Image (tube, rainbow, N blue to C red; front, side, top):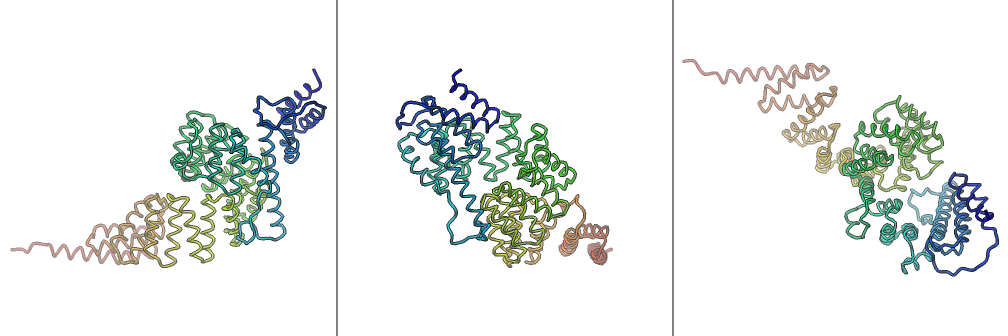
Length: 545
């Protein structure tokens, strides 16, 4: 076997087996062998690449796999093939992204305002964008980019804040390479309205559209639609860890915690070493206060990889559930050191700072979260809660509106907005918000109780009675609370005043069983009701002849 052929084979075999450094060393030897011939500048397809260019791509890929993006781009200077050009463009893009992150960290470490705080300084940008656009734009206009080239151009346009052009480039990429999942996800992030997108941009009629529709529904918080879509996909791909995780995530967003927990447990049986979305699984166990299960999950994650952001978030949730909030913050910070763009860690750290009453740090954490993903309703909701703690209801209302726009079918968002309106003395607006909450499955009955109180304050006793009755019906199987006693006492007086004496007696009897201060009032009221009932009975007797 010729030396060149042997080196080429060895480089590929090493790369296939994950021996990246050995693959790089062999590839460097391969391209160092003297060659003859010149090439013209015409762009070649993958099939038309000559051996020399294939070897250069092999070397560049070895550099790329060891995160030496600048070397990869340099190794591909002047290549004509589609593969080599894409790898060069992508390497240059990542060079710029890496430098952008470094500059952001340098600003923060130097004491400059973090990116989440508005300032007069322009945002840090990828310095490679002008060069990349200069190379890609003429090729795109001439129709000389393949699908991967169109995707590279779309990423540049996205970073240049030109979403319409980026969307068109992504659609072009997908018409050429319909299985390019990265392009589908970028398309979803740039376009919240899938139906409008489908009408505006021609997308390929391909089975990948089913995955895109499901992903877009989940991104847009259309969780019922997402559950249906991923349920269909699960029938076609029954062992797909991705589909199972997304279905469980949609169920979690719908607060169907038992179903979501079952989904994640099935996923862990299928893929015990998978850590993607395990932080969401830990959120479910946290909400259900399953301390033992959360401890077991944290231990299992540490055994897989204790330096993954997901693992740190699981451990952070465990300490938070134990009430050790300082330790929880330590682990969320560790997650962010590993990946400063890990959204879940910023949001969870914000929650911990709220518990620690460090509102300034909580606001900063939540703002970092919305900087990373403006669709994260939890961070907007957290900002609202923090400003409510600071007794700044107008600010809180602004952030609650953001959260409600993202989750219009979540009763908690409407209850939070209503609480702010109530604080501001805007009772009609508060009533409307509580009614929206009540119509969107207010499981805790918060909206019903507050509506009853507001109507009582407005002296609309009929509406107050209606909502108190609904609240009692909802909490029929729950433990008796102060709100239940309040409702029973109001309804007892209301029924007495409206002549519904038998029902009034029932409410009083329930109060006698409960005890407390209301018991004495119920006794006195019951005597009045019986006296009134007796009087009515005498009044209705027929006079004897």
